[in-house]
Length: 360
Image 1 (tube, rainbow, N blue to C red):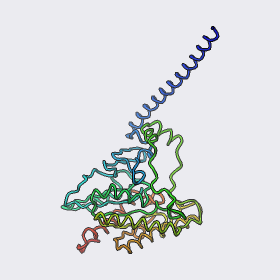
Image 2 (image 1 turned 90 degrees about the vertical axis):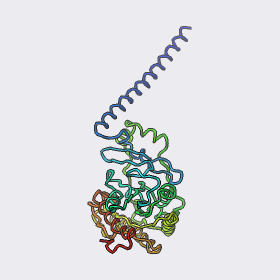
Image 3 (image 1 turned 120 degrees about the horizontal axis):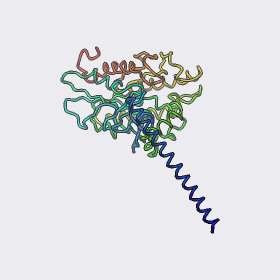
Image 4 (image 1 turned 180 degrees about the horizontal axis):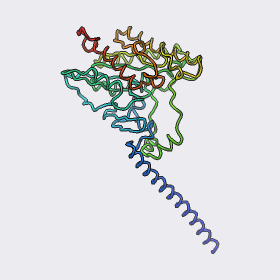
């Protein structure tokens, strides 16, 4: 009996130790969470400042994932907010006034403004440049980091078209590179999902974000195709690209809006030499990726001509150097200003075709 009682007491003590350890760890985590929140608040950051990749996106039935509505993120790198519709920029009424002209810009992180804070992306610059007395202009930043052509079409049909844009500007192409170089592009997932619900829940913890993305950070994002000097656009990939682009153009036309195609400023542009380091680690790989980028720009020009669409040729008309780009594809604040000025000049012809000085 004494041995049995001693065993029970020993077992109880072990459980007490485990419980004390769990409570201690929970208390330490709680203290660390509070301390980190006080620290980030003192820096003017939001509690989600470390978990950027998790807080940006929520699931979307059609596109796989989309931007979180009413997002606010402030950190040492980002100052990003979205409106209730999930677009970066100010609030928009669902129904526009009769005198208002709406321009939607579709694309990926280059449109979204990956390297610039709120108010400095090309869409905000464009709205400022185009607004005139008596002519309200609203520019919708419909860019989502990572979006390919298929996702842009889903976003347009299910989110953007309801806002009744008059003009839709397409600044895209580079994010379709994985499909372009595939022998079987239909086998690839064009609608990758948002982070899981558990990851999104954990992103609310400042401590989790700090440990996961500062102490054990993920690999830096790669903006180039696979590291191969033989990478090239396949016949199947090129055909799929054209089909997706034409389907997007048709969806815009069916909604009653005017599509406009814009080529992208990218390190792969023919005249861009100072940024080749972002395209690969060898001259052969740089050359291969440059050919892919130039194929994309050339195809955008061809489709614009075939479909008789206005073309804004940023890749040819704007310089490509470190002042314009922060990496292979993402515009700096200066780059966003220059792109917006070219957009404004060309779109003035679309908006005011009878104006003699539309391009001046």
